[in-house]
Length: 441
Image (cartoon, rainbow, N blue to C red; front, side):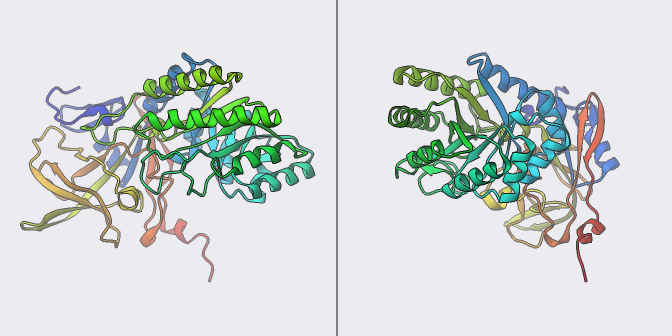
């Protein structure tokens, strides 16, 4: 690492360095060279970071509780390359659509390690999941419970399921990403008695086998307390169901939602902090209630891929409004990262070709889309910027690409993976022809 660099590497991929030219480097490769080779906007993923995060989760949970499965939450970002890494690292997979399931099938992912979530799975998606031999389907509502049993019966399949409950715990995340409260589209509410009814009905079905309970509180969850409260409520409910109808809790999932560090000046919990709190609370509560210790499934997504990805943009127009604001316009924006506009998400930025230059210019990084809200970074302090400079936005590996769009008919960016000093394309940049491929006159 160049000792003169003045940016914080904690929010960049683990292989990040600065070379003698003052250029950002990932995995030993000059990112400015990569931007010239592949064009911008460009998303660069570091394979070492992804594998490191997988290992950290496995170590943190399995060392404390061997009967744990880490299931990567695909919605954070999934394509064939990512799925292959997750497979090789021995993790499970949490999918929420037929599309994500098809990616898993395409690379031969072990289906016994796949959990299918979602609040409105279609009959076609459920048939596909049953036909593929999926490990678990996480049932979200009564309609799905009846539909799944009917489909499984028609196909001659007995399907293991988890019941998703809404424990009524507020994790104090953004209102769009809070999922464990009573007023949520997800899960059977605990407080209304519908969760108990779901357990009872699932036990009486012909082709469904309820083996566990799942909840998810939202994302990103920055404190331990919500997990502890929800675990306590859920295991008490499981004990009640054991007494009332003989339900045996074999698997338990407190979901995911683990926070990551987007801003270098903020502090977050370590993976081990989450593991220690969740496992301690689960095991102690189960012992107190006389429950058999269940298999534990945790579902990190953002916490595995967010830090691994960095978005790169080329500076174009610069608009300086004296005593108001200086806008630095780039060739991407809300089409590839809608999170600032949707969630008021905060990101840092650096000038990737001027990393060692002293900052001093307050600017706002504006995207190219025809929306006033298309601002990636507001009022950040950067070195003097000129057209042609390269802006890098770290912690862009989660949700940016899955939530991307073709707004304004702009093609989505290329994505490359870096490993052992080599780069490879893992998603080709879209063309205008791609955007019109499905159009008919």
